[in-house]
Image (cartoon, rainbow, N blue to C red; front, side, top):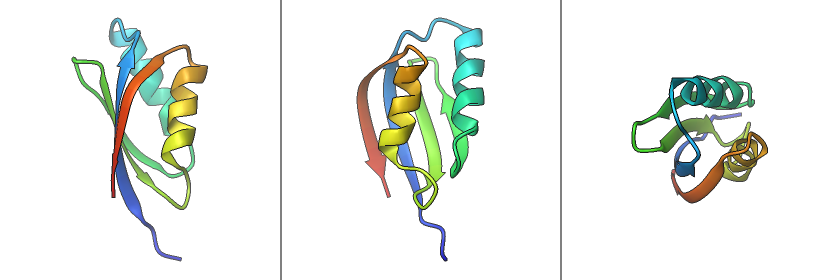
Length: 77
């Protein structure tokens, strides 16, 4: 089975400091198929993932379950 890599970028409301950045990285890293998580200063969360392990909707659900508001999302790949 081949790995299909994709990238998703989410604009997320409610990120207010280093604690939130750490929490988002830690929680998203637990999802099967997530390869890397980057949180930028402008409230963007970028995730590289293997589509055979996780889909964009699941990543978005994890963010909303954590109490963040996903304002926008874009997927490449």
